[in-house]
Amino acid sequence: AFAAIIRGFDGTADEMATLSNSLLSLYDASSKLLAQLREQLVGALDDTAASIANLTAVANAYVVLQDVMNSDPLADAQEVIRKATQGTSQSRGWGASATPATP
Image (cartoon, rainbow, N blue to C red; front, top):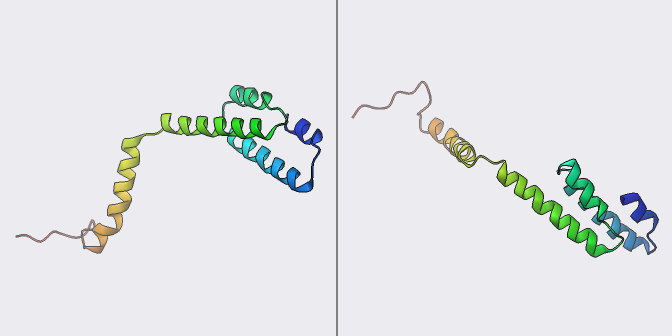
């Protein structure tokens, strides 16, 4: 579908560059989707910039939705805490070999 749009394009070099960048953005976004959905999105393309922009927006939104659905907020929070405390505990002498002072 991408090649057909490029073959049928009639415009200036600047317009071709813009079209190529738009198609590349759509390709990048759709490559992260399931094959069936990607085929449907690419199949819906026509030769207008609006359709390319709209389909790219749909593909990007779907990728974000997939990321949210596949996320693990608790694991993410634990990782942030681990990274934040990694340097702090060692700089205060609280490493594995350090013994806390007795009051």
